[in-house]
Length: 225
Ligand SMILES: C[S@@+](CC[C@H](N)C(=O)[O-])C[C@H]1O[C@@H](n2cnc3c(N)ncnc32)[C@H](O)[C@@H]1O
Image (cartoon, rainbow, N blue to C red; front, side):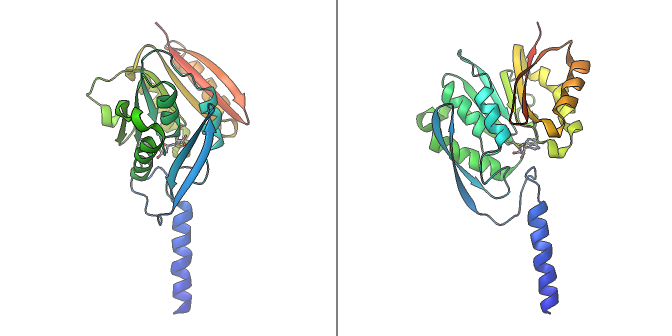
């Protein structure tokens, strides 16, 4: 009897550890965390929960990305794709308050956190911030929305191929001269991705690395005329 109970406990622990943040409905036990982070000279406080990417502290790749991403000065339409608990999109909305910012994630808990974090961190700026849950561009399919900027810390645990496939869709959702910026850890194959996009997308994008910091590369792909 006791042995069976131990087996069940072991199985539950394994399930919790292995559960992937890209799941639509994570079923790990809910625990709420508070993640304070100073970004672009402002203190943000993010509410996070188990089952969401990097719920205990802001991912270093996200931090490096936020500090180096391009924040438009003019009124723009921006997208944080795979927003997690919303850090990238919320900083964009905070710093570019004239812009409209979309945040999309497949994980329902991530979207719940993002909505809470928008209320808490953006206060009166919330009317130009739109959260949607679903598979990448699916929630805006057929809505004819085009972005000046698409920003992303991609879920590479899903496999590099999924991300490279997604890159093919990006141009259809960008305005002329729109930009696609993302971060990749060197150890997760940043140099491979750079080579791949240079070979396959150099006729569509002007491709640059904005920074290499703490083992992360920040990519800038700007749509050519
Ligand atoms: C590496 S995490 C980055 C999260 C957040 N942007 C950050 O920097 O903290 C990637 C995010 O992509 C989301 N994701 C994975 N597959 C997705 C899909 N098919 N459609 C939309 N979002 C997805 C995951 O749920 C996760 O929140």
